[in-house]
Image (cartoon, rainbow, N blue to C red):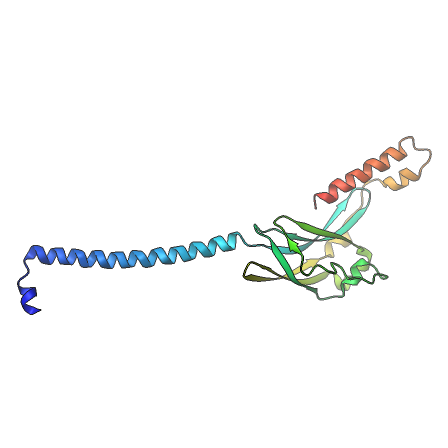
Length: 196
């Protein structure tokens, strides 16, 4: 081996050094490419995941109506595997309800952009329930997700009603447009609710 190294000319040594540097550079480049591909794969998975959440909203045309909405804001569909809250959700539907809010939601497939909304009885939300903590677990393909979402109702106590009561106008048999105004108000309410 020693005689082989001594027999090398300067140009042979420079060539061998260039080959060695090229091999090292190739190995480093391969590791960087593999790392970059893994990072890109992770970023693509995160960008294309489902993101199912719950939030409160209200519409205000003839009267103030409150809703809880479960929506998939993600780019892929997901299946709800568990849904819970820190209170008995029957409270939000009124005192005589036997079913809980979103009863039967477990196992529901939520497509991207799909939402499920339900009316809630805001009078049943007392000061002690101004914030309800929800937990939604869902899966997509082989991945599982869990979201803890606080929904505050504190703002609902300060929503002022400044619009005219169209139900009162509809009951006014002397108002010349009472029936038409009631129909328009109901249509506007439907449009407003569809935007939630």
